[in-house]
Length: 274
Image (cartoon, rainbow, N blue to C red; front, top):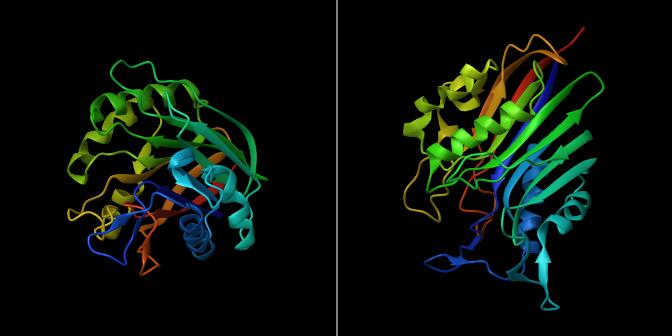
C-alpha cells in the first residue's frame, strides 16, 4: 500500500495583513510564492493543483517593472526551499493569457492536455495530467468552476472527465469548484458515469476541510475548494483508493495572506495492481 498526498490551492486574492482593511497584493508576486514554498515544504504533497496562477498579469510586476510569470518562477522557488518537482504543466484560461491552471508532480508526467467542455454557457477551465509511478498510473484533473453558472460548470466537468478518463483508471479531481457546502449533495452526478468518485471531505466525516474560505480576507466562511478521488477501481493500474485524511491548512504567515482561499490537503492510500 502506498500513500499519495494531494493539495489544491487557488492563488487569487493574496493580501497584506499589516493594515486594515487588508490591502490586495498587486505588485511583486515572489513573496507570495515563497510563502507557498514554505507551505509545500511543510505539507510535502506529491501532486499540487493550482488555480488562478498569474501568467504575466499586469498587476504583478518585479523590480524591473515587467509583468511576472508566477508559473515560470514557482518551480525554482520550490527547489530552493528543498522541494523539487519532476514535472509540471501550465494551461492558460480560455480567452486570456493572464491567468492559468498549473499542476506540479513529483512523479513522471505521461501527458497533459486540455479539451474544452462542450457545454454552452460555461467556460470553466479544466486541465488533465496523467501521472505514472513505478506501479501505478492515474489521472489528475485540475478545475476552476464558473461562479456565475455552477450547474453548467459541473455538467461541463462531467463531460470532460467522461471524454478523457480511460475506463477503469484511477483519478483525482482537485480545484476551486465555486460551490458552497450546502450544495455538496448535488454532486451525485459523477456516479452515473460508472466511475465512483467520492468527496474526500465527506468521506472523512467533514469537519475543518469544509472551511476553505480565508476569513482573514472574507467575513463569510464556507468551503468552495474540493478534492475528489476515485474509489473501488478494479481495472487499470490501481485496485482501490482510500481517503486516509483530509483537511484545510491554516495560514502560516501573520502578515501576508497568500490567497483568499485556504489550501486543502488529502492523504490517499492506494493498493497497486498485483
